[in-house]
Amino acid sequence: MKRKIKAYAIIVLIIAALFGLLYWRATAPKPGLAFADQGRTHIREGASHLEYNSNPPTSGPHYDRPARLGFYDEELPDERLVHNLEHGHIWISFREKDDNELKEKLRKIQASRRKIIATHRPKNDSAIAVAAWTRLLKLDSYDEAKIKDFIDAWYDQGPEKIMADE
Image (cartoon, rainbow, N blue to C red; front, side, top):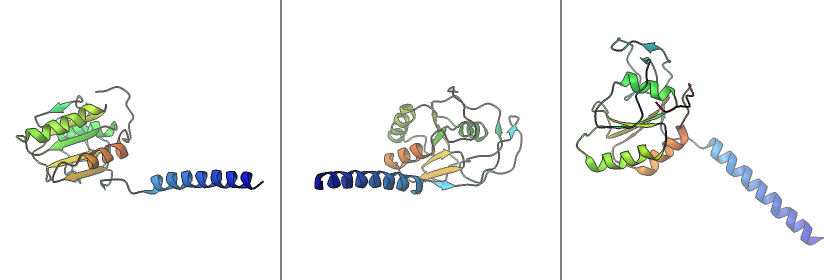
């Protein structure tokens, strides 16, 4: 009889620990700063629009075509990349074009999963910015763990789910 009680007690403790872990994961703060949703309006290329509320932008007016996924040494229009965010993509941008070591590290992260795009963006006010729909992580130096945590938290969380890779 004591063995059965002990076995039941262990099972109850394991179940309680699992529920505790699930609760902690669900309520733990997610990485990055939150920004107000500025909408999903499509605009024609080159059209003017209200200023974005973050640098780089995380939502708002954007072109009707997203950028093709990949790694870019050149700058792409913010309005094109906001469309990527709308589709649940992660946008990694870097300020210094000549930092080849950083670019190689970011290239590996970009290539590690679908729905990630990386671009040069000299307008960043931090060395690295990682953006998702209404979320932004800014880093002054490379931190792989923080970048991957952000990606895991916000990957495929845009308001418009698109299955195909652009």
